[in-house]
Amino acid sequence: MKRKVWIWNHYGTKMFKDQAGRHYWFAENLVKLGAHPTIFCASTMHNSNESIPMGGQKYASDQLNGIPFVFVKTPEYKGNGRSRILNMITFYRNLFPVARQYAKRFGKPDVILASSVHPLTLIAGIKIAKKLGIPCICEIRDLWPETIVAYGALKRSSIIAKLLYLGEKWIYKKADALIFTMEGGKDYIVDKGWDQENGGPIDLNKVHHINNGVDLEMFDYNREFHTVEDEDLNNKETFKVIYTGSIGKANNVKKLVEAAEYIEFLGYQHIKLLIYGDGPEKEALEKYCQSKDLQNITFKGFVEKNKIPYILSKSNVNIMHFEQNSLKRYGASLNKMFEYFASGKPTISDCEFGYDQIQKYQCGMVVDNANVKQLSEAIIQFSQMSKAEYTLYCQNARIAAQDYDFTRLTEKLVDVLGVEKKEIQETYVGSNIDR
Figure 1 (cartoon, rainbow, N blue to C red):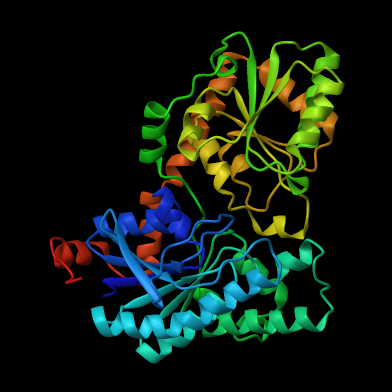
Figure 2 (figure 1 turned 135 degrees about the horizontal axis):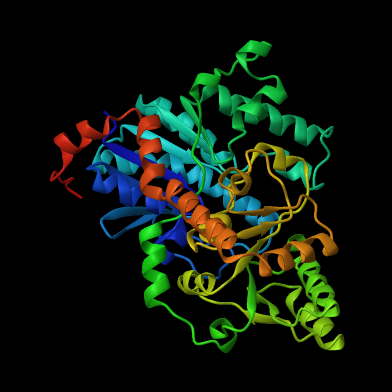
């Protein structure tokens, strides 16, 4: 039985601050089942100047709602340059003495769940688990180096890429089990020829899929108690199209601006686009809207995460955009998508993913690689839809959210951990670890 679970996520520090996120919700539900998870993360917080005070030690620890967090000492960094690489390497190196000290003090775990983004965390998990004589489950939330290659930052034929692919293959071979957040994880391994059927070393039976999702209980609580006073949101005369997220070149929010311009040109004055978020392209796009005197689009700026559920509940349709590249065929694991589902409102996506959830649940419309005209027509179509048809889309969205609620996703994780839920409840409910 795997009653003590170490969860390693370099960037899990933000979960401590937000009291939310994939591994926090996993841990929260594992605690309810009587297991004892501990989350290991960096002392630095990604995309923030904040960090955890270390007091000259290799690690610091704290608890959040009964979940222990271990903060591994790492140097501060900005951007994606050398300082960030140093931060990754330091996290990897410091995991070894921290794991040794923590295990000596509190006892070794029964299993390590090592999660990417970067692969060094997975390598550390495999090596340390071997030293402790326990299994290591590697969770793949981003395909490295495939993601870097797909976005053009690294040539597939380069020596660095080839070395990284060899490292990736080694991780998949050595892990006791693999969890992919994208549903096409097995497809990716087969495409690489790394599966046993193709003469490779990887047994596909140890490959699992647990997507990202949403904590519906928290979402519904925030929707009710963290409201926003906003005339645009409360205007019942408009058909509200909402986008939430970053506003950078990769997000291509310019397409939404051009869609608003086209919709206004066609005379659909009741349709309004509301853009929530911040980023380097926001100011330029606002100036563009002003130069065109667009009245049907408003940039609302940054809002706290706990306000998003209320905002989405006021939408009529939500917009999801993804840059077209080779990764999409393996499926999507975008956090935003599940918040959109939880809002109980339809989603329009301009990218058709492999194993596409919007199409599977019929909870929106997918127009692959949509141009401005196609995106505008999809918005207009929803604004003219009959109440019965629109309501069905809304109901399907909520059904999708229920299937990806973290209570259900944790049940899948329990299966991968090799723990019978009944056994955990009978044996460990009410027990305590001396911390």
